[in-house]
Image 1 (cartoon, rainbow, N blue to C red):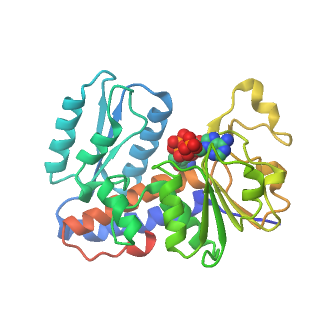
Image 2 (cartoon, rainbow, N blue to C red):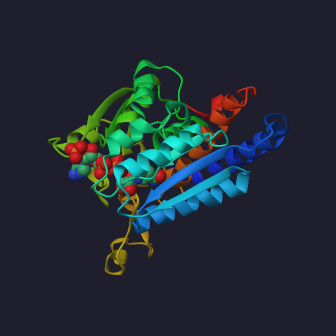
Length: 303
Ligand code: NAP
């Protein structure tokens, strides 16, 4: 039987640690941690994610600075808002919910976030720190994957890892974190030829392609560990694609085709998704401890 990498359970365990950390540090800090999530426009998926994040803040005692901004906000207006959050002493973390409307330049906005308040680790300085193996906020989704692997005692050192996807948000930082943990890493992308032969070499396969059910039985070798980062809402007419039971969400992997041959896998939902939100909270609490001069007690939760 494969080991199911239960992100929901681990996220709850980490949230409890974070809640206790906030309770015990707030007196000395004289304030709770603060997280500002910037949502621009009305993309429904972003709305759902921002909602999760705000609820998670409430659960553990992080003060949430919600900013739902109009779709046609200008680059300059958004820069001004980020500037004021950079200066706001009650804000420890700032997250710009992606994707942004097409008229806004994502790169320059991410760059305008104070690297020390960069809750999603996407500022070029923090990406550079990741490349150099220096401490700094790390991108939440790959950080969540690393925590899930660590908690389930999955050895990374010496393993052959394949990451499908090379986005700045997931694939690239994921590959760097696995390499830093001494895996030998191959990155595949949309121009990769013969994906099957590459993924079959993996002891550890992380799929972040954003393509529903891209990876199936033939892509995976026996006893591989498979992490499915993708998350997609199936249209009602597609729900029967899942042979055994009806589901509304799916990942990039046909887990029902491979669950009998792999050593471990992360389910969708309940795998990487909850861990992403939890690592955002962990980054925020870590920043808060730093900003308030508290002892840094949760570094072991971060990669
Ligand atoms: P993205 O920016 O669209 O990047 C997708 C990557 O996959 C690109 O590098 C692309 O290659 C590659 N790719 C696309 N089709 C491929 C194919 N047929 N074969 C191999 N590679 C292929 O997406 P993302 O932001 O990284 O997110 C990836 C997935 O993870 C999405 O489903 C997203 O919803 C999900 N996600 C989940 C969480 C979570 O918390 N669970 C968090 C973030 C993202 P090119 O570079 O050549 O275009």
